Image (cartoon, rainbow, N blue to C red; front, top):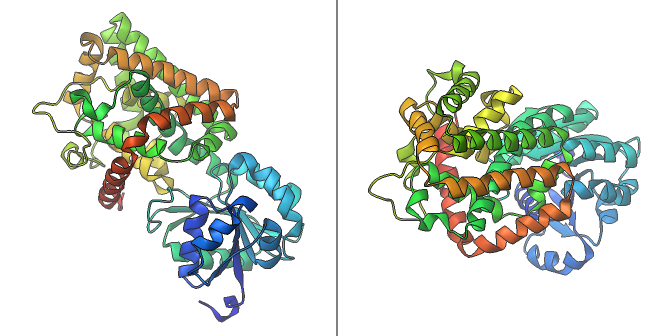
Length: 431
């Protein structure tokens, strides 16, 4: 660490899972960390960090703001304005302030509105969850209003994460995170909704075991094991995300109607048109994932013969990308682990002619997944409706109800999910 940095400290306002992860990694790297959360958590945080002398838990954000040279707001996106309004005026003169929210438009607006004019604004966003090691993962840095010296300081502080730094504006960040996260989350949330509505644990059914199904199950459970606001803020506060989630629901609905009506040729034409638009320029590229790689991460017993599935959720994502003009490969540098897996299994289906044709045939001729697809369609439309209406309470109520249903299997699914992510990230690290 540079000598001029020795006396400087980093503040973290909001000690949720990401705030705690940042506090641990920054203090491990030698930085003095001042941190706080709501008063009710003060004693527990003091106890949690009692063996880390580099971390000082403070009574409130006023203390953190006054004492710190670089302050990171790690709070829910929907609360960012209120929290910055409360603590922003206490910011140390000439300090640097940033945020860790997944939607930057309201964050930057709050900073511009409530921070003193002498404060530098440099925001960040680690594009992964707190359970994923940050090494090699995308880290967005946004130099919104800052001197070169202030920005260089932030880069030095966060270099201990060993992440892959991407420089963006806040507008670019919000568009790209919508492209790489919004629909991904909506699809997995809808799968969990459908399975719970049909009162099934999919790993106990031979219909959902092996290969592609392992990704669907493990990542769905991984999402529902997290906190609801992680996904609600991105979906509701990012206008680009709302558009994409709405289109995904429309794609699911329209494809399902073609399946119900038995319009095979129309379905095939639409699927192949979307395939060409999204994957047409990548035919010679090596696949991100292979089916056999994923068989080892199963919550259930692998069947002797794989059951055919129409993969409505995957057909709809490519249809959605086509309709929106999105090319997912363009955002790999800013992609989350979940997005890479979602793209990987989607690519696997669409770039295997035989498997894609099987999915189309199954969609028309096989009723095995018809009830599941019906609930999935309902779910996609309902999530889209809650997002477009801006219902945080409605989003939370639905999320936590389904979360409770799957809760008994979270520990095992989280373990498997972590192993799967580690293996797949190793496979795709050079992509």
